[in-house]
Structure formats: C-alpha cells, structure tokens
Length: 239
Image (cartoon, rainbow, N blue to C red; front, side, top):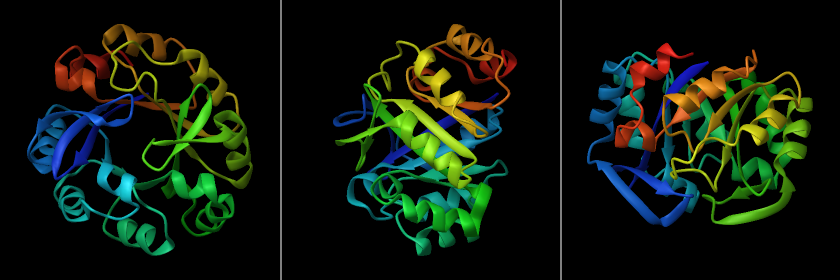
C-alpha cells in the first residue's frame, strides 16, 4: 500500500478543503512546486495533484505549475481536476503525468471512459467521490443519483484499472477513513483502489494495512501530513 501525498491547488496555492467545500479553504503553501519537492524529499513515492480551479470550472487553470512539477520531480504524479477531453488527457500524458484522474466527465458520459480506456488503458484513473454512497461531480458541488459502487462495477467491466474512492463527508475532517465503504469498493472486481478522505494518524494507516487486500493500491493523505498528525515516514513504515 502506497502513501500518496495530496497537493490540491487553488488560485496557484496549496490548499485543503473541508468536506469538499470551496468556501472552507485552508492554505498550506504559496508554491505547489516547492511543496512537491518537500514531499519527495520526505520520501514520497507518488504524488496526487488536483487542480481545484479546474475541477470547478472544467478547464486547466493550474496547468503550467502542474507540468513544472511533473518535469522536475522523479516520482510518478497523477493529476486530476477539469480533465474532460481526449486532447487534455493526451497532453498531460505526453507531458509525463503517470495517470490522469477523471471524474465529472465519466459520471455524465460513461461512453467517454470506454473510449479513453481503449487508447490509454492503465494510465487512466477514475475518482469516485461519494457522499452517503452517491457520486458527486463538478468539483464536489453537485450530487448525482448514481451509487458509487454501482458505477464502479460498470467501469471495471469496461477495463478500468484504478479507482480513487473518497468519502467527501470525511475529507479534511481527520475523523478516519470510511473503512466499510472502502471494503465495498475493494470487492467490485479486478481493480486497484486508492483510498482517500479522513486519514488522521498512524492508527488509520495501520487499520487500512490490516485489511490485507492486495488490490488496495494506496492511500492519499492530505490534511494529516500538513497539520502534522501523521508523519510521512511513519506512514510508509506501517504499510
């Protein structure tokens, strides 16, 4: 299980949202590239970057700094936020992004996912950001009528290899991950699942590792490592 630091970018700065709310923002740094260098120096083996402005608007607002991070760092970087076309996927992947993370677009248009999987296969991840089991979209500001587990099964049947599962109600709260919801995702089929949301400390990392599921690819950590309730090196040692 990989420990994956999150770098969420809004207005060019490193931030964390509380329960996915754009009006509940905490700033943790003014330079995303410096933050990426920091986490790589702390031993990160992967990074998860989200263009929050892009997620909200549907464009690539923070594209320039994301590409600088990918170019300079040695660790794999997955990128999400406002990626809704073949052109943008192709551009990011050719720039060196390890995986692009899709969300709103494939919730609204599952056929689009089938198309991109036919071209890019295991370089595509889908972020299923859920509240009360239902998938959110457009930067978490709208709830769909689709259950996350049902959508996951459909996507895995198409050949999807990576799912990022987030319980929005826990994200940024430090109250612990949604273990039961995660177990459901881990059972949908042959897919790598990345947990996200709510991780507070080493106890949460141990609880995830104790699931002993080979398809639990990793866990995204955000507020805990920024607030210091979890040290990246300790988390890596608990996996």
